Length: 148
Ligand SMILES: [Zn+2]
Image (cartoon, rainbow, N blue to C red; front, side, top):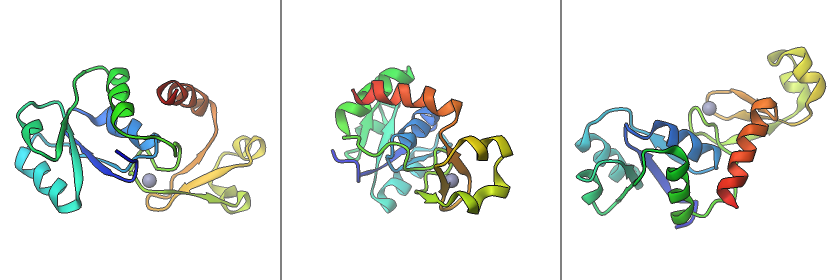
């Protein structure tokens, strides 16, 4: 399955949804244990459902996520979706990130961050700013492990 496919995670899979966004995959999180609701949204938006529910997974546009463990879940994702654009999507709201000029965000980040970093990305919808801080290294290592 190529990464242009869009997904929707059921209410059990909030962490997975966030990590899939970090991997650059278009993923919504449906925070409500309402099967007709998630089915309707998935069909309307052409999304594949990722679910921990055997019942919901019987639908043809749904995939059963086997493990409760995030690392195992990510391994399963890697087997079904090709991943090549990590760090291109906002982990909070799922929108695309865009590179921004450093000067443009000067007033929006702490001074010491501005001093030591040169590459900043901004979410096109929620306007959050991202840079390769201490958090990034940890996430990058995990993503490298997943992709490898
Ligand atoms: Zn955002």
